[in-house]
Length: 464
Image 1 (spheres, rainbow, N blue to C red):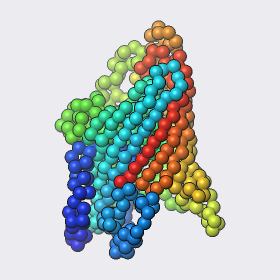
Image 2 (cartoon, rainbow, N blue to C red):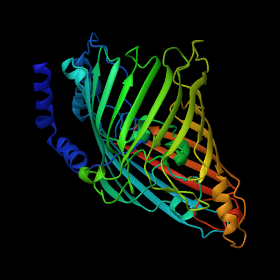
Image 3 (cartoon, rainbow, N blue to C red):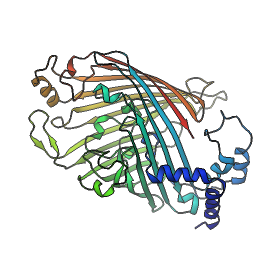
Image 4 (cartoon, helix red, strand yellow):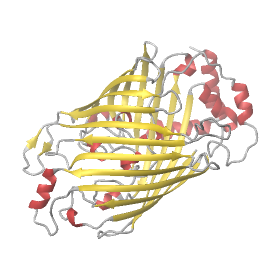
């Protein structure tokens, strides 16, 4: 163990900043909650031969600078925050707020506001003590009213939508073995973060987090992580090239109840198990990185019924394919490729059995341009297209209901256009437009006779 580093770490936590340290403990370890759209996936191994000049980094970060130039709203804590990150301890605090309204459609119109406060701590033992291990804990408080609960559509217009709650989301330890070629993660895990997450900056749930069809096999998701284990085989040891990984997790009847705090682990083991298997290829080198994934999520739980006949069904699964890659970058003033700007492309296709699931196929297309203007390389503009095809069983059930306007549900198409303006590294303002064509849903007998819905939204993000 690097005793001098550990001593310095403890001194900084309890010496320079007791208030920040206690804030982390109360928010995260007590009953915190998390969100996956921040990217909790574990990166490749740290090069232990790299020497960090902490004295120089502290000197640089403690120089006087405008609040609009610093990375976090609360600053660098006199240089100690950077010093701690160099030694393996990273704090992350953020607040996201989604204000949305549905302006058209023959449903009752709404104006909703939903907020999420997140806190997390990462302890990288590779940096701290030359030991291939990592602790991660994250918690969240979310509150308000989300628009998706009012619309009854296959598409949820907000990636942070969910129940009002204050809870622990993820708390896990990951151990690397054989030069990081094998990784074992154990603890409370939001499985969707590791399998199937899209992770674009867009506001919609499908493009901003994960397609709705991905939740059918009962994999735990953020902010309602559940006990589980993830095993990854990465021959490169550096998240480069071919990999295989699988996970097993406790399933649930209701992800938020009766486990309202994320700490009722005894109850979590009462609803069976769910699993995911994925093979993929990481192309992380070069100027145009990308990732390609093929996987399946599944369970064998006897809790399903045929949507048309009511016949009991056992088990469920979702198969998915993901292609995500940087496809173009502009040239800078020096004639070299500008790695801070460029066009990222996403293609995702998912399918599920149509006799027990409302959606049988979901497809996503996404394009994000980072740095749309040379004068604003930190901004982003994005376009998303989501196809959700209703299952034949759901359509038949809708036809047989006899309600006025009932009939075949067909395919719902959702379009999204969003721009993220970043006046400071810690502050984002994101106006957003979404348009839902053929807005069908699983709980409305007249959902085949609805007008198209235009949604306007404004997302704000603060990073502390």
